[in-house]
Length: 313
Image (tube, rainbow, N blue to C red; front, side, top):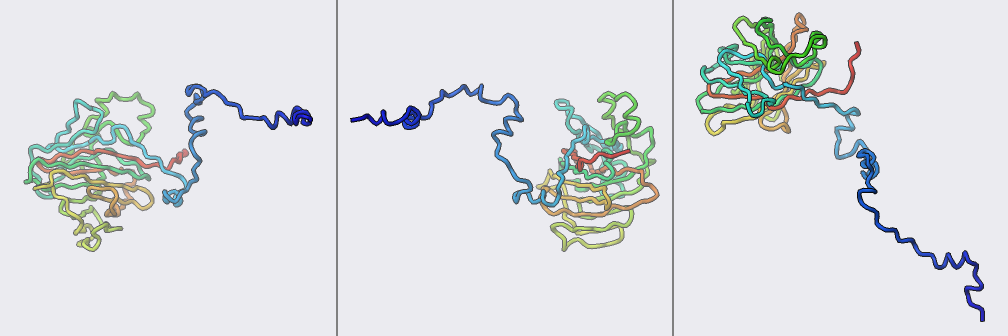
């Protein structure tokens, strides 16, 4: 009898007896790519964008960039009743604005003594601000938040602007202590235009304003005058409420507007149009607050939303 192996060729026998080779497990450090980007491209599963989980990508093809300007939460001008306090432990954080001496009971006496303004806002862009208001006692309930356009005296203004200026690109940079210097608001600082949201739920403007979106309490907002709307949610600081967070979003695009939210950024805001002044197009908008005795306010966050485009000269 012939052995089956004698009827098969060497290649057939090798094919019948084939077994996968057992490879020794290499060291984990040697198999990892040295480049992090190469590692992510190799091991991360591919994703298709836009996705149903992020519907905003379907409406906007180009994602926006969120920038946090340095010292964006600083105060540039403050009234005589207010003090600007920097945290000695963390001096890079936004300073506190404190009123320790003067009672402010109505909006007619709020500016300029009990008011302060922040950095200039970028024209044509969207700026988001988050502010924390705190009250030490329940007596002082007046406060307001909004935007102003000023024509201040050059000797009283701060030396740093949120926007890049031609002088800033040619001159040597100032030291941090000089960059964060706060000027003084006086009676000789004229207000060109303004919009304020008071703690009583009233919205005032220096000229005609419109409520474009009444927000969550839309049926309560009513038109009192060309420059006055009332019925918005109140945010008095007193009694059980000693701390409050307000969100303000300023859109200085084709249709300038400002929106206000209380406590959370996820609810429908109150959107108000900004007064238009064609005769002063170069005057920038600046955030402005007014507080009474025993109150403290701080700009927790300032975000500049950019579409990523590059301006051409």
